[in-house]
Amino acid sequence: MSQPVQRAATRSLMQKYINKETLKYVFTTHFWGPVSNFGIPIAAIYDLKKDPTLISGPMTFALIAYSGVFMRYALAVSPKNFLLFGCHLTNEIAQLGQGYRYVNYTYFTSDAEKAEIAAKYEAQAAEAAAKEASAAAATS
Image 1 (cartoon, rainbow, N blue to C red):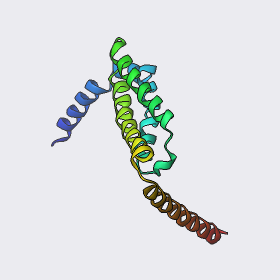
Image 2: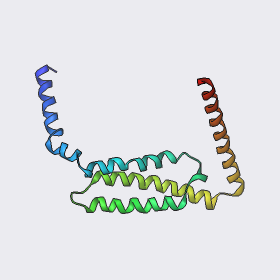
Image 3: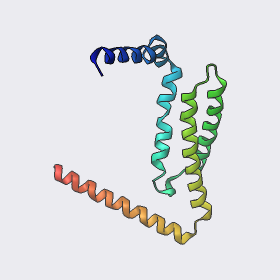
Image 4: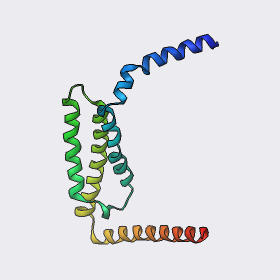
């Protein structure tokens, strides 16, 4: 691609996507609210790998309801806030996964299986603590 053609293509792209309206949108709460709110679903996705004994049932079900309400809100405001909707849809899916893990562990796991799961996570925690202690000793 020649330099004048590349320059024209870049200018066209900039005019299309980086314009006054886009910049106005980036500096609104309509944008930054959902962006800052994405910490909740990111944490929920990360927690899907953690010990099921640590899951708080009431909090998980509160977050399921919260995300459901705000998905509806995101589509009820004018203009529709699809970024907020996507944030809460992601959180809803992650929290439903956590809710499934909570219900499965609490009500459908036998005591023997619970002891086995607890032993597994305790061993992992002890191993992580040993690694951390050796790393701390190495830096001292």
